[in-house]
Image (cartoon, rainbow, N blue to C red):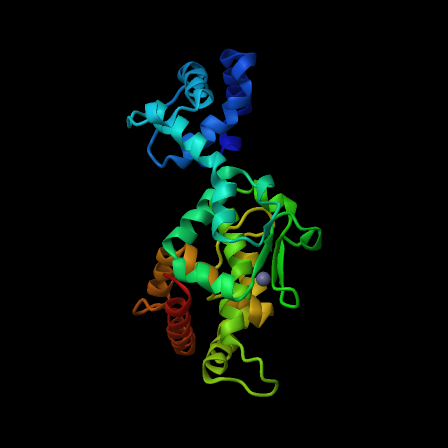
Length: 292
Ligand SMILES: [Zn+2]
């Protein structure tokens, strides 16, 4: 089970009924915290109905000094309390955010953990004066966008309710416009730098046939792999942003993709292999500059 919504509706209703009115509001958050916990929780409807009130009581007692054990019940209560702190945590790192309080704590947590692991990127965002609006009317209907005039990353309201992994990827895609793309692309009109030229040359090969040999991840409804490849094929800056996101949030999937491209004896044309080799060299060079 990857999302609360994957539970059959009958089971959800039964759990809510058995949990009782007092703790009904904890059903979804507790189950989501179990999913995020990344440890296999063997659960059943009766077990969840029993555990949810217990976890809710630990959470409501809000006494972290008593939540030190590593048993699953304690761990989930601790996670719920930690999720509540994510807005403050983000604001302490990046002052320029708006409406972070509307984003579920479990989603902000993914972003905070990424920022914790990459202090150099936090420095970049602060120096470049980048702002994030999490529920932006400017992004309505398009997921997200970056507006360079006011150095703002916009996410539309619906994105905040995506799963934590998809939320992070959509946010890091826009961050790719704000960082990698800006650093790569020269601001001098008419003068391309060598790296931008090489990245553009690679894109010119990889964009053929709707980006057949590009990497496309599943980023939710209407953002499936085929759509994401086409998106990158149609616009160079989307190729920049998406591959920055891949490099940051899915390095293993990117590596697997390159291994498949370079597999001896397959039918991938040589110029496609060469284009990927050139693109990755540039992506890695700028990732080293921006991350960690
Ligand atoms: Zn984009």
